[in-house]
Amino acid sequence: MKKSIAISDELYEMASCIAKKRNCSADSQIEYWIKIGKCIDDNPDLPVQFIDEVLKSKNYNGKDAKPFKFRGEK
Image 1 (cartoon, rainbow, N blue to C red):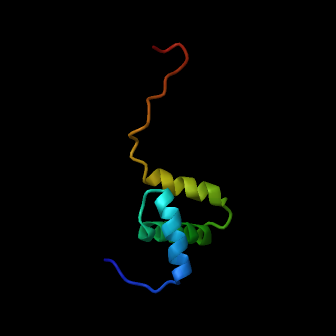
Image 2: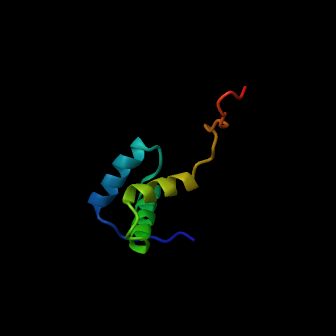
């Protein structure tokens, strides 16, 4: 269920700017920031970069992935 919240114009503009670069909506960018913030609160010992990569990997569809080939494998 979607809910409306009030945020500052400045925060919305920042989200819009970054969202354009990442090809997503300002709403989804703000949701992503909230998820990162919650993960940081829940896991203060984990580096932010690690949390960011975990969240991104959860949304990865694998379309660019290639099977791993061991040395000597054809």
